[in-house]
Length: 200
Image (cartoon, rainbow, N blue to C red; front, side, top):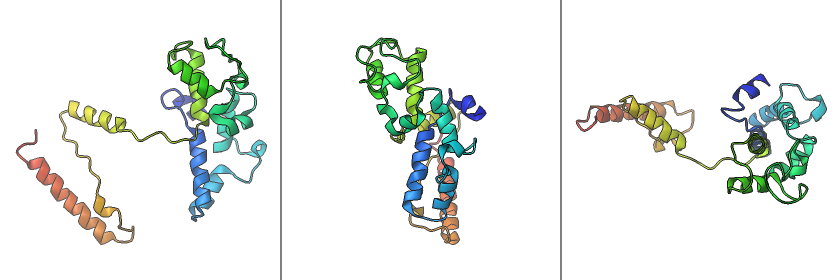
């Protein structure tokens, strides 16, 4: 819980997504990964008997901060109606409608469109935090991280080389000679590029 609280603001924990991914591993039927995923989820354990540090127990504890019925929230995810959120009403969000008919997703969409209270207000942030907890959809691919990294390296006057070795796509872990040959070739290419006269 201390780790969850420490990183909740800077990097909200997507526990719902983590649990969904582990369930996908279990459905794949590939061992020993299935056994490890089942152990991490304590799949055969009732929620009230879960170890306190388990992924599912942490998820349910965090959900209790937002809703009275955390099991229903796990099932409904973003479709949970506003009336199930603790201390939350559409009126308090500056929106119109019935609390029992408007979902968290719908309310957030309206706030993001400029209706109701600003997204910087605590109640709006609470909706977003709840959605991150229950949403099990992966985020779309983004170049933002690479762009930020490249910008930070450029500011230091460094040469950054980011590459993807397509030769390794069909190489198994047992073919060490192929890996070593590819690594040596990559090192030669990087060296040649770094020594090129046009590199600043």
